[in-house]
Image (cartoon, rainbow, N blue to C red):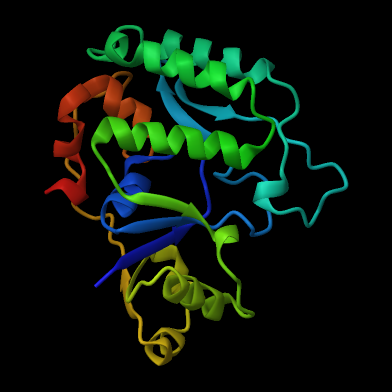
Length: 231
């Protein structure tokens, strides 16, 4: 039984995103979907002494109301140094920051050479998977033919990838039609984010849904112990 998950790409997402990747055999980035503004596609949060701070990649959306995620371009590359500096300031005293700082610097150097948001997100995702020891195959929805219909498209993507089991994020319960997956012969399951253990954090009360960078900088090689898919 081949397990598949499909999600739109996020910028350095939280640990739950990587748990979904780790729970399947193939993870498909759903990047030929419409880009949504003020969403997780181009931003995420880190903890600071002054509360949560957004790290946002500036993208070109002017007059491009229907552009796809994989068509969305960044506007300049000044943001790479701004994000790196913000992370350095916030996590300089984290136990494992120095361990990962060279990797982070290299990622942002490479990001300066990339013009498309999807390419940047995929690069960060792949590297963090490597750090966590996640070996799941990552592909793009544009690698496969797309069917018409919201649920039909997901089921067809799973079938095209040779899958027979689909892991969905919990928010998709609002629109997925279960019968479509049944008809396609694909078993449907939903991810649950309940039961995450807390780990030591800087800067006040514990927050689960910050970028996974927080978990890496605070727990280092023990990060998988605080994720559900490694249990």
